[in-house]
Each structure stands twice: as C-alpha cells, then as structure tokens.
Length: 183
Picture 1 (tube, rainbow, N blue to C red):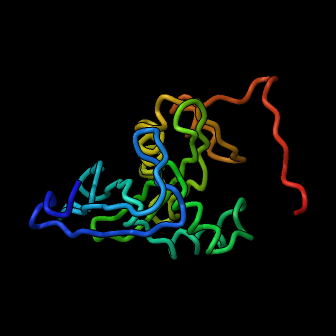
Picture 2: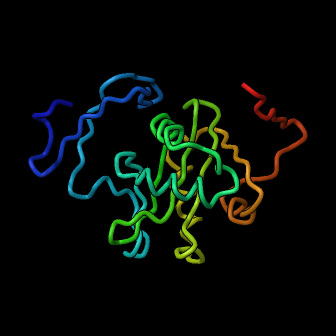
C-alpha cells in the first residue's frame, strides 16, 4: 500500500521497529506503514460502552506496564523496556477500552503463526470486572488469525472457569515446562 492509497480522512503512521512485524504468517522486518482511520481500527463493540481493538499503536503502554508491574502476580519484576519489546513482537495484542478511550484491559498472544500460540498478560482493571469483559477480551484475542488455527497455551493460577468457557482445559500428562535459569 502506498501513501497515495490512504483515505483522505486517515492518519498515516510510519513506525520504525527494531522488532519484526508478523503479517499473513510471514515475517517482515523494518518499516511498517499503518493507516489509522477515524474508527482507530476498532474491531468489536461490546454493548456500546466498551470496545476491543487489536491495533498495537493504540495500546497505552504506560498503563499496561503500570498494571503488570504493580498489580499482577506474574510480571511484578518486568521492566518497561521489556514490556515494550513484548508488545512489539507479539503476534496479537488486544486492548479493552471504555467509550471515552481509556484502556481498561489488555491481552497479548505470542505465536509461531502456524502451530503454537501462548496467551499472556491478560488483565481487566478491577473497576471493569464482573461484566463479562474478560471473557470477551480473551475470546477476541484467541479467535482471530493468526492465533485461531493454532494450539493455544497459557499459565494461570486463577480464572480457570473463564478460560474453560473458551475451550481451555488442564494440560495432560505430556505437558512439561522448564523455568528460567540464571543468565
């Protein structure tokens, strides 16, 4: 797509990323051209009060880092630079937003784009819980390509009932994991 192909009402954002951009199951590195229309790439509205968007440009990285480093049990020691890189290299990131644009939740998926994906860093702010938004956030994160056609794994010590509603099950006897060792 060239700049001349963009709609007159759209903003054109050119991003130089040190990470590779995954698109259509192929990896391309370097410059990305992203056209953002007036709808900001909104993919799904929830009862006209909330929206889910998979536009990585729209993610409020400071809010994500603040929650994950301060509120989550799984990423308390994760630095901002690491979080930024994880967002940039993810196969899919999804933000949950209030109608005023404030980010209320987040989900990230890592994938090889063919066989295996990993769901990570899912959260919904406490003020927005109890409305089914977490279920919709996860559904939107995993039910779209390139993730939908892969085996999806996750680690969690809570919210098992929510994930079960989306087809997640406890791992079988063949599942193993290795925790990080010192570097």
